[in-house]
Length: 424
View 1 (cartoon, rainbow, N blue to C red):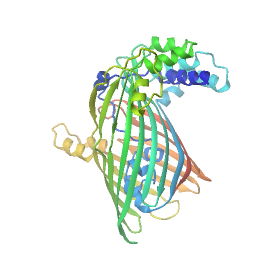
View 2: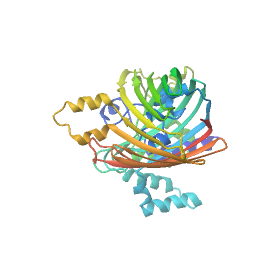
View 3: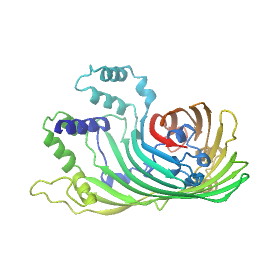
View 4: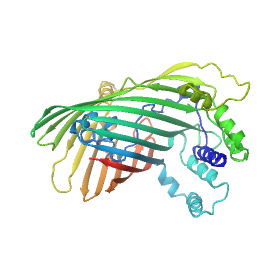
């Protein structure tokens, strides 16, 4: 068991290639969006649009008014993995050679480290994201929904060129519990008015970073106890919670063929954080018991409390979903309307700035297959899904903007999402 634990810890360190963030450093990472949202493959494939045509369980974090459809849904579990800068990685012959050797079992001891090095160098300077891993369960009973999600997101910050010497990888760990409710205010064949609300308890944590030399020493250390001690007891951590709320309303016309939605997302999104001198100390403090037993003489340092505020957004969505062959769905969302109104009043506003707030997409269904495409801030995305016997697999490939202005830093990503359950 100890060898298994050690292997998991080393593998995690290898692919994240550092855990970076203390309280002071987090304040300087202005590019990172601290708002929590699980990975939705369908939503991303359709250009991050679909507020008026949200899936049942996905609606918990987008538009909870969808729960007013009063249908049964179950997800046990949903798992999604997203890798960024995929195009650069695939077009790198050396990286693909390493991947192939890992698949066929001929990789040497340094293969994972070399692959992580390749992935980091492909990221470039400034702010990027390396990977995101999601796991969740959910259930919808009539108008009521329950969900739980765990997400690990690996951000990277590099001053100058991105390499193992100057990169900081910032893991964002989220654990969320959700309660959601949707109600019909008006329900006729010609007109429906639905409202919904979802409350989330989200705990967020960051671990302080390790430089390349520290990671190398961990990877070369055969003493499982020593590695565990370094990771658990010598890694300063910050963690805290927020209770954000999402509200939504949807007006449906012509037997649901035309839908108009408005949502207010991430209300009350202020995280009440605390600093800890170790990950083990944070875990023991949050759980309220000694999950990890400290060594004799260990004294935890006093925790410092502070807040991280995340903004709420006002969004509008449109969907056209006629009940005809291939079940087409066309969506268009206006995102962050408050930000758009502010930009309209500035002297620097340009017509193309509207692209920063417009997302659109489409979906068609052929038997058990779904084909999707969309535009997010002017960047294309495509996706496909297949559902069979209580199982669903969705894949998405697309581009998004990581810079302050359109065209500054377009980054591609690939998501694969597996769902075991039923969501209709």
